[in-house]
Image 1 (cartoon, rainbow, N blue to C red):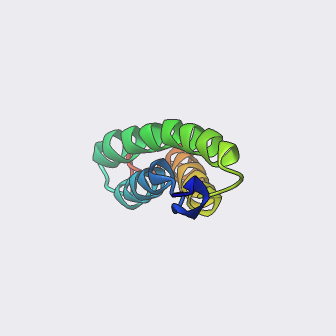
Image 2: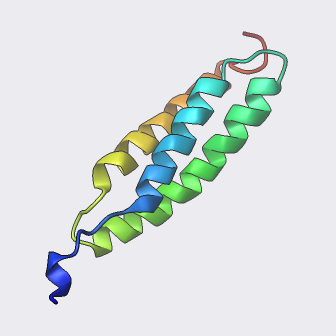
Length: 89
């Protein structure tokens, strides 16, 4: 059986997507809860984004779309935290 017939997936990309989305959703919780939960999850998602991007590039671009969305979620979370999200909202 040929290896080319097997579907190539990037589960790390989807993990980065969901963890980044969870961080973005949890970030607005006030009283530093969102800062700890959303910020912590966004750091994990940032590491997963780098790993998934390297895996996706090694697989000729498979799974790059969820990585891009995860990176956007991470940037939005960090941007929200920098203007006070998770602390005073």
